[in-house]
Image (cartoon, rainbow, N blue to C red):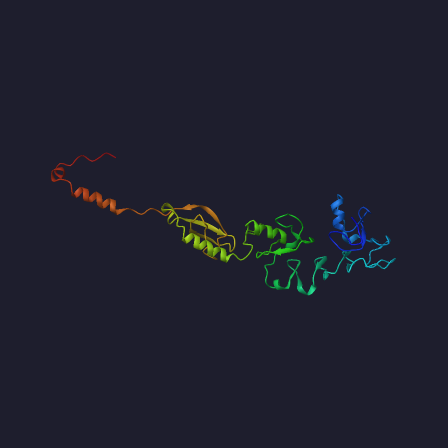
Length: 278
């Protein structure tokens, strides 16, 4: 519902005239929730003042009553809102919440990232143009903050928080660990040292592939986890069945048989029985 305060999405004092259907809505999100099509924010040409109801060209201040439609206004995105230190990023093609000096645009990722990630993140080309792998909703234009995983993939911060609460620790796309798991790996080390496998599995090995460093290796099998010999991660996948170590010969049994022959009475040795047929 329109009001001088705007809507649940933005604080503004005007309505946008949708270029697609000609209807008036506080914002494109309100429009898209009600209609069976989406509003193109970049094609908006007219707005209506929420105070005097004058329909006019899109601009920051009402030409009739001088009411300010928004503390922030972008004449490209036609975004009106209260001041949140927003800035328009030309390569991204949309407005971002700033301040601008705290962010930089990564040309390869094609995304604005926090300055502390400059030279400190794994680039994935056009990564934000992919949908969130958890909810399958758009990331690039979403109003929900994005979270950058160590592998370079993106997902909504809210989706990442849900993953953590549910105990999921791997990227849904590449299975790489979603954060530093060293403390958890140390805990598994302790649990394995305190939980030896049954005798029949002693010495059993298995081939694995590490999801973190991509190493292929053969390691001891344990139901609690198989540790990568390359990086020490337990984020691994079994590659094939169990490899049992060959059983060693038991010379003790042969010695016992020899002793039995030695202990045989002399008369039995003098009259040997026929050999058992094969």
